[in-house]
Length: 395
Image 1 (cartoon, rainbow, N blue to C red):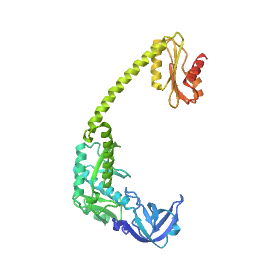
Image 2 (spheres, rainbow, N blue to C red):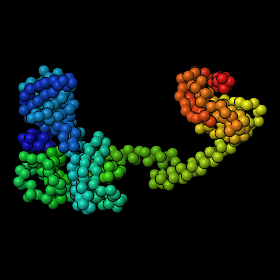
Image 3 (cartoon, rainbow, N blue to C red):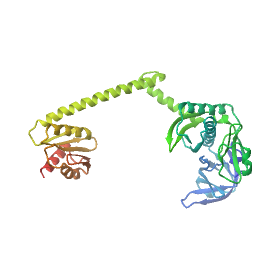
Image 4 (cartoon, rainbow, N blue to C red):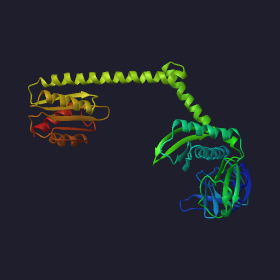
């Protein structure tokens, strides 16, 4: 493996090689195997490279047994003899920045808090590491981020070295190494020594910067999300756009946006509480008005009423009229909804009404003997549904 071009020179962007053979897998994917390659295959937590072979797109790279397969979009018959390979350097360098940044940040947590990383994921937008602790304070996160960025600013070299198992004791490794045979170490002198098969830049300064974005608990560990290099600038640009938009809508300077937004949300909570109280009072008045009728069945239909509002209205009404049945329906945006409730002095099960009307609207519902609710397609109007519920009551 040490002879592959991506290990010999991680900064190599273009190369020449000879086609060894081509093939097609069972799923129809076409691939090319070369005499050597600078394309990094998926492995070690780092995604594969993309690019071109003689201007034919390479969309995936995998190491299968003892060969590296370059999966292409095009005709393998056009790739024979000498070929010229070219990496999608923006993608490759981004992965190098993120992977090296992970080494640096992981080592910072070990150095400062003896908190090891147990897993690592390099995503298309963010990178995550799972730290084997159950809590990390904001002060610890800030300290680790600052230490990592200090290492970047010092622009320390990043070396790689192939060693044998019996040589591992010569190095202060961050964690035990499970592989055997030829072992590749990635070394940041006097800071981090780690076995790794990934591709990294040649110095810490090329990582540019590290920014922690957030944390969450994950299976007893703490998962840290962060970005490095150009992703820091992309993240900053996105957040700047969002903050500017929020500040503009609140008509305040950006620095005051959080305070202004808190005031708006607090005012909204007060308004929502007052609105809920007003709705409750309105439903109480409607229930009393509905209960004025001498009829044993009290019915009303509405527009744009939630099933929760219908339930409250029915509940308030049967409290006023324990000798009555209440039937209410509402014609909402894309469906019909209804509630049927009985007073304490009524014996009839409301399930009978639901069983009769739900098929008419291809609906679903639930409830018990005292109250049922349901909804379905707008196969009729709310007024017509109410008539069907009244007819069901007579059975």
